[in-house]
Length: 581
Image (cartoon, rainbow, N blue to C red):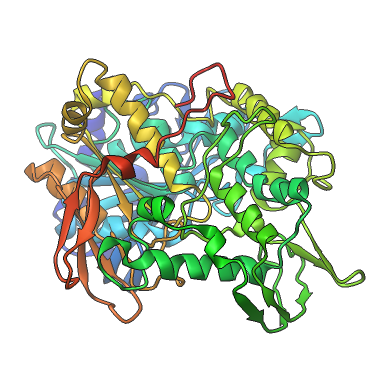
């Protein structure tokens, strides 16, 4: 196959030496650099189709890469699977030949989208990489999995599940790496470094490849991954079932008051008062939620836009005032304790103290003047569409839904999607043996995917990969190639307006490149405060299991080992007989 690749490469030799981006960014040059079909068994690349256009002076920036002005060639190509009537689109951002640094970057999606737009793809160009994304064969880059999942009620499109689960990214990486080598006329002796970056669903997509294909990338940056897919999606319904079970539906303002009091009380536990909960574990050990009972709250009347989980279509909410109730605290406590079945056995974990409880947001009935719990968001859609196989985006209500119902839904989804979406294979031996690296990060105040989900996964991998080593020895061994960082105060894959002085690791890809290409292992992870009063401040994040602790004057941070704190992150999912990874 290499001889074929280099025969094609000769056609694009001029591309590699050209100085002008506009001179190389043409459809003819793109088509000439497409790899042969046998680069991946079972596909046919469309050699009649390509779009390309030069983009110059594009100002880009996100949580995942620093602000920059970039030039690139924006390319779309297509391929199909043999004897399947489909069409998969790939988008590549190509740096100018003079800026190409022999790098490829795969980019992940978010929610139920396999492509997250320009959240991360421009970052590849900044670091001299061809940066790629896939539409999964769903019909367009804007089409999400739920737009193609159900062919008819009761009939699931399993091909789309497999593509979303892991296949599309593997195909894109294979094609994209070969295309990059051809387009830039790389010699066989030259190393093409391959990387990945994604958060949330994009984090799960990254792990789908790490767990299956040890030689696909040299390094992967994965944030707040939505793995343990069935557990994760059903968990979004848990807060509403708590409210129905306890027969108390707290006004959103009451829950916000408990949250704000929690942040204020737990902020200084890391030794620094900056409005950031850096030690949610100490918060769990030392803060009593009952201390918020009786505290007054007030929120003015407001109108929603319909973008929230509960207020579908928008709603007018009345002014809310009162004092925090014992019932409200009981709801809050039950949610943060995590899902248990009717026998008290743990089924899943929950959000850290300091995280907003978006899943608990109640809806308002303007006729009766009461608050109530309603299903919404991806949790309701998961039951209706992924389990019941209906072309519906929600279930009717939570009536009759118990904790045991939730556990049974987790079990059903776990079985149904174990080999595609669950993404929990903790034996990473092929990845480890390839020498590839992992930076895994998660906001400590994540309101969508519990931070403890990442800690639990890391510990599962540690125990599977190093069963014969003591805790500290196995942690040190794992840290040579896989490092986990919790991000103080950060929300879901982003900064957190409730804790604006929290840092965010915006340069993860640069750190990964330095680790892979120069052998500089990140001990702490570089992060920057991107908003708030401390905007621009540089901080270093501690690698798990070490936790941050500031000096008395709040100027110096150390990373400490605290067994009691570590223990707060441990869960035993004894509601299931099978091990949960």
